Structures are given as C-alpha cells and as structure tokens.
Image (cartoon, rainbow, N blue to C red; front, side):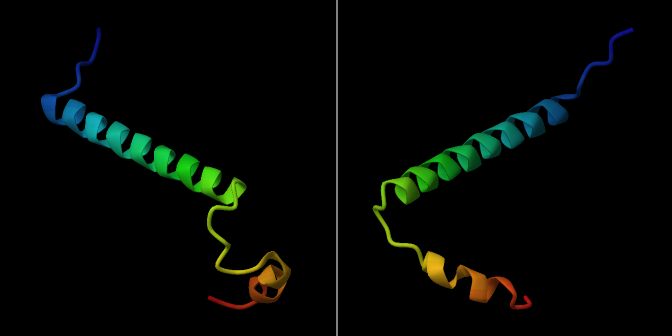
Length: 56
C-alpha cells in the first residue's frame, strides 16, 4: 500500500528544495568570497575571542 503526497505537499517540497538550493548557493558564494579575501571580515580574527564571551 503506497501513500501518495497531495499536490500541495509536492508544491511545498519544491519550494523547500528551491530555498535550500538558494541557501546553499549563497553559502558557497560567501565562502569563496571569504577564502579569496575579496572582502575584509567585519570582525578581525584577532578580536573574535573578545567578542565571543559577550552575551547576546
């Protein structure tokens, strides 16, 4: 006995898949920008430890 997904569920799955691909693409692009040093980091690596202990 196979259970079929409704049209709404299939549409929602397609929207989730597109959002996931967009997010993954943005993450990869941001990583390439970081590795290539195209933009300087907002917080220098030397200061990360001082900001790490601050509360939100």
